[in-house]
Image (cartoon, rainbow, N blue to C red):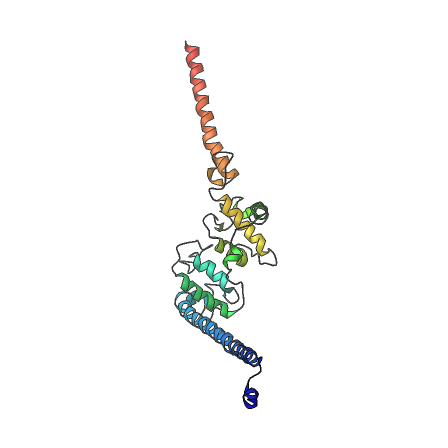
Length: 269
């Protein structure tokens, strides 16, 4: 009996063995799983860059150079970042059909997956603005009134107070902003495409960009009311003045002719 009792395990032995097993399992997971995940991410990123490089060679290199260094037909893409690629290619502005004062928006020719691959390759050439996430550009919960104030201060000089666009110098123009996705609005503020100045987070914080996006979403939707009646395209004093001259002056001329005719008829009688 003494020998049997001597061979019995301590009551805490099983607990010690269990804790040791859990520690070993956790250590193995920490040692191998993160590195495997990192390896997978790195492999996927490398593949995206490689595919993007192929797309770039076919559709972009003739203007921007084989290494993105730029040519006389296109600017350097080193350091523009993935956000600039997503905006320019996602809105169909690139590849451009022909050189000109300004490249207009058109139907995109690349799929979303191909745009991501192009963006990955261009981003690998040099650090730049990164494609935003949905949480960054979503207008949910933003301050519409603050966005209107910011828009009128920083953007209305070119885009009109309601984002209807406007003419600039030498054949350039500020495009209309109705129908532009929140993601592309955010990227435009990030990167400053074409004639537009850029507004990085150091100049205009992320929250302010969301406020502006919320304002544009409101003013160009059914949520917006027009207490003045017919908005005449929302173009402001230009369209209103034209309407006044064409229809107002026209009505006054017709009225003058009618009064003169009635007066002449009255004199004859």
